[in-house]
Image (cartoon, rainbow over all chains, first blue to last red; front, side):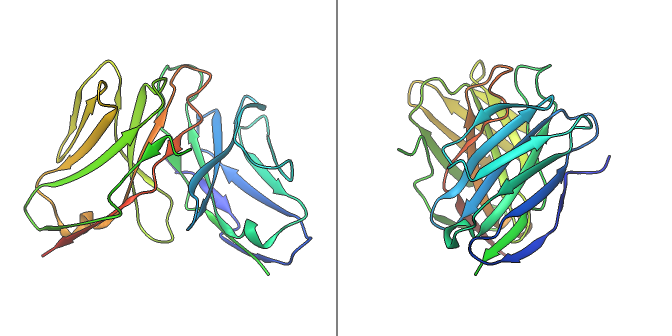
Length: 115
Length: 115
């Protein structure tokens, strides 16, 4: 079974621009979660989507948004980029919903650099 | 307020010996715990998990112990191998079908296994 895939793997943007990252979950997984990893803050939860609905949200500003499509693929968008948004953005998928506990499986991440 | 803490940033162990990685949490609502291993430039890889109804879970060389009264869990790797050298993250969630998509991570412990 193919794992979680993320595109692009690397991205360089300038301040003020916006960016869209894409994530394809493991086949059959309906939940997609997004995380930001930085050296100072570690791995922080951004939001989770399940059946095209945002089910959980972390403590990030409204510039960070996402969506999920009917095939469970997900995108996250960051508008008005700031230098501090430079990070590794990780997507994780899980079965979601049908089981009480679900392991999350991560993709390789998208490395975003904001200049 | 860091709800999941890994107080040891690094650990060095000789090959063949036991590695013990520790994790503490403060949120008593957490009832599902996971360990991930991460290599540079890759996403975290799921290792093992445990729910709060258990106090031990084993999978090959990996065993996770949970002490709910102390809000403490540990990961034991026996025997340790050089390929185990990586950053290990402890993560927790409140469980339930509505919360499985949100993991709270510790800051990580870098394990070095010396040949």
